[in-house]
Length: 596
Ligand code: GTP
Ligand code: SPV
Ligand code: MN
Image (tube, rainbow, N blue to C red; front, side, top):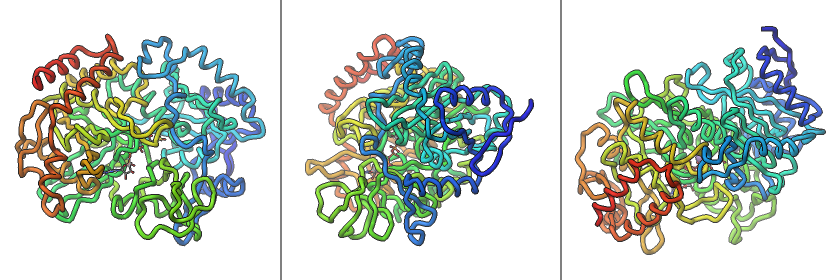
């Protein structure tokens, strides 16, 4: 292979992958940027690009004494979250995308977006970002290349992924990489499309500059294309955090993966600090958003976190709710759409301490204490390197990942769903995941607080037909000789007064303790028609300032509420039609028979 010298921000880099070079030339010919600049991932490059972003007004430096190495960005107010209605799975047939995805025929999608990309980068720089999802050198890692005209995307990808020359080296001459193309265009929702071409391992994204729409390694590659590859290759790509938990008598941590929908508590659980009464327990974060899981030679399910940073929800993050996240964002972090204090620090609703008298809100307007408007956007976010997390697992960069003993599915439900339940077996566990409902949040554009089915927290992220995705989960059982136990949780049940019944956050450790004790078969459980629940006294509630009535209300199973829930699940099953696996239909019938 002959090497070609390509231009980077700070010098030259050598690239010998002919397919990659040809594709970059082809895309550049279409987009017509003024220059093409490759990303090498060096510290010098980061410094130069950051300085340039500041000079261009894309980033504002924060007070270096309060937030060293931190910068602030404001997005267009029309561009503050994922856009599910503008996200498409472009498989040859609509049937492959299935009824839960928007679909466009690949030819039509390419033609439409080619029209938008043609000449779109005139006067701009096209950055070429080679990035890896997963540890460099891991057999489970996937390589992607994102072409973008956004310097903000480059700097975010530098935190969220391993990127640059080492990825080019890892790729070698291989053809197995994802082709990602992104332009912010004029950030107009009328010209905003996030298109996935699973058969071509290609992603084209236009018209947005925000988060999951444009950091193509994250939702687009690691979940939508990832889930498609997972089915073909026999593994699972999931919207799950991964954490390690070690009790005072445990020789090793037990690893748990948990799927909660967007803005429903993954980052918080992944970084949880146990309450004083469980101080002997340690928690380590492996990942906070995405898990790639494969069957290991030992017949267990092994998980890696393909990301290298956290793109986390800012509002609600405080020393009390998530001290590890606060430590993670103390330095070298990018903040998007939060509020600014007068002394150049960040602020958001739910941060402790007195509310500042005056702030600059997420749209750059002066804000006064007592204003009815939120100072920070509800989906404002931080982008922080995982290396900053005091609770980072020593295995976060382990090419083999960690063995998973328990899988948890959880939604945001103000009623019906009890604090914790264990499934009877794998297929019942898949049923619990497949029927999961959750109230919508600000992480996606649309109405907030509406219950919808969000199976396995993958409704917006499954890159193919949902019924076949369930079939893939069911089929995995035969491959996993030592399968994890499957649980369902709900931290968000409310009392009649509208307040959360369960304190949540660090106190979730009490539930996770029961989960891993169950996974190891070292604690009993009570059988109910819906699943196994903790026996009276088995949830460690010492030191918790909670009345018996509250605990009862948080854990209660009301079969009348569940009859309504089953009707809603039934409607969802209907939308999946013939693609719904027979096993899940049978699970539903068994359940209905049990509750009468
Ligand atoms: P994405 O990054 O969008 O995938 O979200 P996530 O699942 O990582 O959500 P995150 O942990 O950032 O939590 C989002 C919101 O839920 C924040 O406002 C938290 O304060 C709130 N939250 C998290 N855990 C709990 C909990 O145990 N109880 C309650 N009541 N709220 C919680
Ligand atoms: C989510 O919405 O689930 C996120 C944020 O993790 S984003 O990257 O914008 O998708
Ligand atoms: Mn997410």
